[in-house]
Structure formats: structure tokens, C-alpha cells
Length: 94
Image (cartoon, rainbow, N blue to C red; front, side):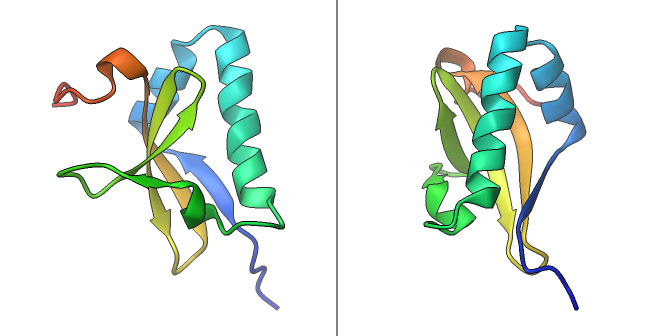
């Protein structure tokens, strides 16, 4: 029987972003992702806010912004980028 629960994963760019954060911020991001996929009250896609001109949604974690995609076919939350608010919305991920 398949598991209907959600999981999360980091794209390689998000892994690099997370690795560059202080340990406290890393913990906050991981705790938030776990909270989202384990929530009995809301579906994970309900946490995402639209990003203008982007296929991604955003999730706020303090002053950090996560660019995410919700893969509803296999219940996966994929984190594409993790940035501080001031640099989260610039086109610098070439």
C-alpha cells in the first residue's frame, strides 16, 4: 500500500544554499519543512504563496525565503532555492 504522506527534498542549489547558512538557520529551515509535510491541519501546497513570473511558490521562514515546487503526483515538496529576503527575488541563479 503506498504511503500518502508528503516528503520534502532539496535541489542541489538549495543544498548549497542551506549549507551556507548558520546552523541555527539550517535548523529552522529543516524544522519548517518537517512541520509542513507532517501537518495534520493543512495540505503542504496550502503553505506556498505565489511568486510573480515564476513556476515556484515561496515559503517564509523568518527572514529566509524558500522557492519551492509542490509535486502533487508523488506528494513531494521540492526546495529549489533558499535565500535571505533581500536577495531572494533577484535573477541571479544562472
